[in-house]
Length: 243
Image (cartoon, rainbow, N blue to C red; front, side, top):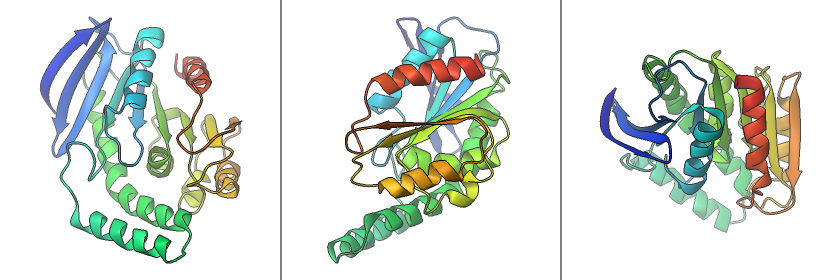
């Protein structure tokens, strides 16, 4: 793990790093040295590790909960190079949608492909970050919606260190089997008028989760219109389960 830069503002220390070929960012309370909970955040499709929704949530996890937060660019996003195979699939999928095929199954197929790379990468990131003195091997949470949900479900199913997760804006087509192996507390977000993920698929993914404690948060609006109130709920959720 190699740190590239460091900056602090308003009590939050931000460190950019690389782990092999993986670019990432770590946020921690300024001046912290003790073990603390860690939240891994998965960004949405077409976004990156410091996308506005990731950054705003991360800073509040740090300042209001005292957590450490880490996010990395998934393949072909952010500071990572383009992947010819992914570009080819995206072009083919666009043509298939224009020819009348449904979008949701194509998204699910693509996410399942990318997850085969990201799951071991994210586990390696957890290994490296938890060895740092100012993070340590505390409890781990996961937050990810949209692409972050499609990649997060198989990651959580494979990673026993994750104790609680916020997921959503994703469907069951590619994730139901992995969801059936998830037993940790989950807060699941659904946009009732989601134009990218059919409502039935979102509800099916929620139903597939084997968690004894899971809550469904359904809000009116389209895919990218999560209300700000869900951030407040997420803070309370992680404080309760990781704090």
